[in-house]
Image (cartoon, rainbow, N blue to C red; front, top):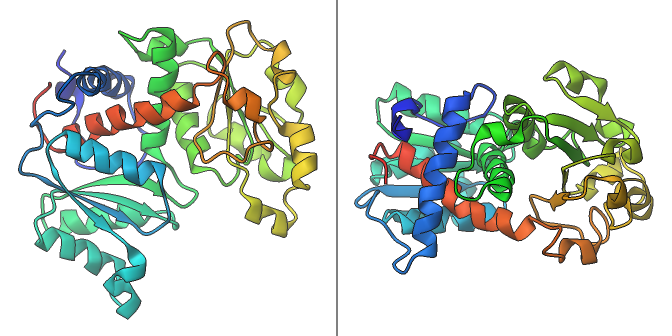
Length: 326
């Protein structure tokens, strides 16, 4: 079945309703683009003549740069938005900003915002106007970060089978996510993708950051203690510690957090023999992960996550652009 035959979405806003066929379509297409990136030209004309506008109302390095490079590799024209120097400072609304980029010819809007629901509101407005513009959520508040969830999925699957990544590879694999689950949009997107894959998913964090209600969202195991959760784990994913939560008395000191929830080489001894570590970045070295572990290519998949991001985002822009398979 051709990858695009299962893609019917006008926008990509969340993974909560993704189907296994859609996940596999993204994985298969991303492999094709990974091969393009490894080649000599590193570029295809799939989106030639189209305009991708990156509207990042929130600071970002990895996600924004990854989208910009993905658009260029697809031969699209790329526009970048900086809120500090935009008309938002003069009172322009977010919807008016989006409509301005549509009027300039943008075909795809990549939206990142600190408030949940903003990409969805922009998508609804574009549909109301029959603009034909596609919207891709690059992270919104505490809602979701679907492209991070998909690149994490791609990284996990290609670590098992580099040539033929597919959802079924993660069935029964024990995957542990550690950190600020409550406020993490990355954790939410991974929750949907990994449970769809049939993974044995375990969430770990301080009681203030891992409420019992998470067990009602999907079939997951909740832990407030790290040790038991790590036993036999195949993959361990740590999340960025949001230091601003400390002012809300939701977290202990950085030192205490590392002692209780930091991932170190010693702690991995109880994991499976081929355990690998992931982190969406940026990493607080010595807090979520020890530096030596982060830099160990035998254990860390963090560089692969960054590399995977470009191929996966190429696949998603390609799908939204409505072109045929590579």
